[in-house]
Image (cartoon, rainbow, N blue to C red; front, side, top):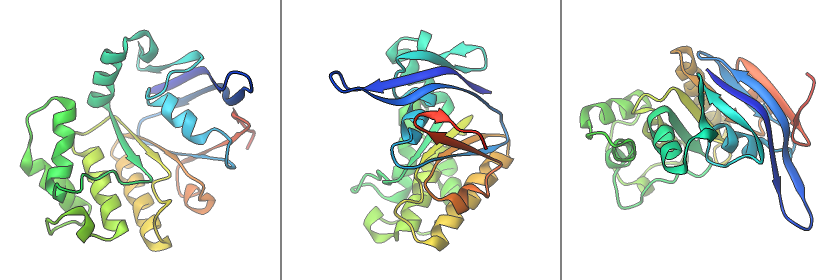
Length: 216
């Protein structure tokens, strides 16, 4: 279980912008959450705080009974590698590695021995059978490779930041179908998205306005 307690994040010095303002929320396993809101509402910042990529000005995030921001930076990075997976709008595939090698990178980041069979199974689950370089795939296929990389080490929580921002409607729906399927297997999936229609297919919609959770 992932739990945010009174998270606050402000940017700037002379002119301050409050990106996240006192957000508290509990995210349960087995559910897909969509964080939605207008541009500048704090969606991505909240996602980065929940995943401990960014550090809050105040408040904290618990995974079970572990306070992520009571850890040192190195310990927190190791924790993220063990327990969290990440999917971004830009696929961040390494261009000189093929699809299988891109997925296998996740094992290195976690500090595990590479399991090539598991990497291939992750790709096949996402409908990638041919092993080629990233530029030889369509945008939708590249995003599926990125998802395979994120889930190959079986993370407890999967974060996705605008994962359909560069995709057409058919591939966007396919990506959300995959994310919901992952949640149904007992994982916590948290997606920041501008696509209200696709967000409506998730189990829970969290609406942000001016850095705060708005009433439904």
